[in-house]
Image (cartoon, rainbow, N blue to C red; front, side, top):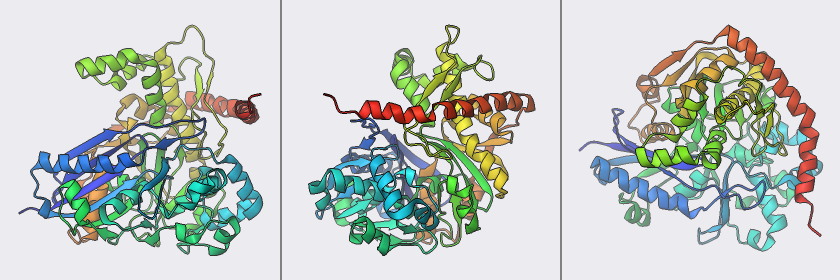
Length: 519
């Protein structure tokens, strides 16, 4: 009887999974979208019950598809996008909807924390910016705006932590996820600062137990086994989704770099010198422990909040014909949008977009930022908008990349493209030319769930180490940068930066008008 490993990954827009053998054969995969709920401006939520319902469907579906004997499943690992937060009561039932990483409601709490605790003090402890709205900020919002609901909170979990809880009954957060709680998390000491917790009035026992990714967090319970079709006793662990994606792509060594264009657009570079996190460039990024040897290895992850989501936005709101063709003929609506943009030249003939549809993360950290279309004329088509949005995401990522290069962090080229919109050759070419470095695409694109399955194999002893990640990863579709295109893009990039600085203060004025109480 063969052994099997399962990986489950929860992104901002959907969940995916895979079931593999220890030889690297992917026997079954699953994917299911879930709705993003934007009940109010700057809010972004999920229905938390869906996380578990989808897990049950994916696991059962993969067992059926593969014919795998549930008794031979040796381990499960779960990852999720961050920051995220699922609040549960003492009966382990969700309280309110879950926060996802695009939620930006807690602006007053951010300002209060800067005044009360001090921005520099928090950054020197956490190596991260407060504007990312980590879980502790959102807990403050709950305390201030829904005090009765706040009193019912037993634990605040990540999405992966919630799914792991449903599988095992254990309430934990791993050291790689913990930086996304922010505010009081000491990234070097790997603990929460109790004095800051007391200052901000959040009880420490609301936080789950800290654990290492490379240890068993719990075992599948009888109840979970009945629901999923598994058997009790299977070891379970968790990690950050980006780390999982890195492992699946063979990105495991210092200096390795990978990029995803999922709901969020990002790239990550592995490093070992903690001093980088506290440098000027490092403090502009998102920093956390890497899964492998998490006490001594880190990863910096520059991110633009709406990466692949920006093209999904165009599809969902302005492309009914493309979506109908996909429904009727099975032709990807995204491929149809790419075709419309294919003949648009570099710079989209003078069309520039600021892609800040839900505020922006690195390096500008502007929770008030919004999308801007600049230079629109009657000459421009939807194809121009699609390409300009792709270029905008490339500019947003390059804004961080140039700072990291200037800081001298070790980078091993080529950049490895992996998940989401990186399947678009045009988008890969745009980023290659904007960054002016070579790129490749992962050939086996099972994504983060494969990295989760590899982690499960290491934790349970099926793998001695992560050597299989390098062995299984292969790359295709290499792209070399065009110096001519890069120079053209740099002119547009400088104007892109100027436009943002021209309207930066207007974003706050717009928010004040939007949020002004009606008479």
